Length: 297
Image 1 (cartoon, rainbow, N blue to C red):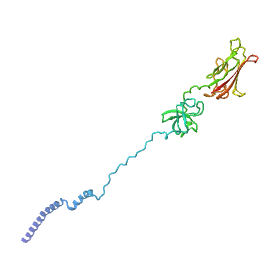
Image 2: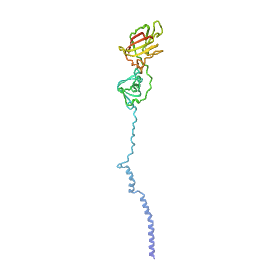
Image 3: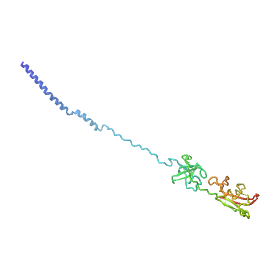
Image 4: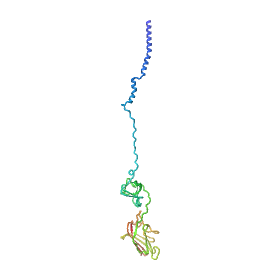
């Protein structure tokens, strides 16, 4: 019995010893694992090592694209808009036609101008183009003939331009030769810039114009030719070569500056003309006759 008790006592001591030693071992394990191991250090430092390595390419910063330059429209020039080229030396006028005289300038061959307007009927005739001369910065008119100017547009589609009328045209200039005839019964009055010619008649012993006169014939022919180009008969004073009552009619025109022999007669041309003025009484007898030569300049 004593031996059995001894065994039980030692068994209890062994159990107590084992129970007391266990917490000490657990504390040692906790203390060791609280410090990082080499393997754990390598794992935690690896990202730093990679981020600082020069062998690993870094991602480049994205670059902004260079701004794209959009070309702006060029300023208008003579070549980028309507333009015309002068083909031969042209007079540059204030209005559409040769009636606007004298010219204000001259455009040389190959001059570049800008078209502005178009008038199909100038004064006295022809189509005319209004243009801007960029060199002189002046607007004027040139004849719109195909052999004179060419354009990169249809000039006939340009707007019509209202202009001031031209100055009155000068009448034909003339001189008269010696007047032959019975001057004691009348006289001829000349007004080249107006009515050209008027016959004032006097019957001998009378003062009234045209007394005892039935009619007066005016006959005009080119010098040296027997065929008249103009005739007119006046039956009452005033006896005027182109007619008229209170005053003689002006020299007829067909268009600006185009003078004619009568309202429907041929155009007056420079040269010499034979003129006869014959006055007759009621019986048809000649009372007097005048003959002269006109020179139209």
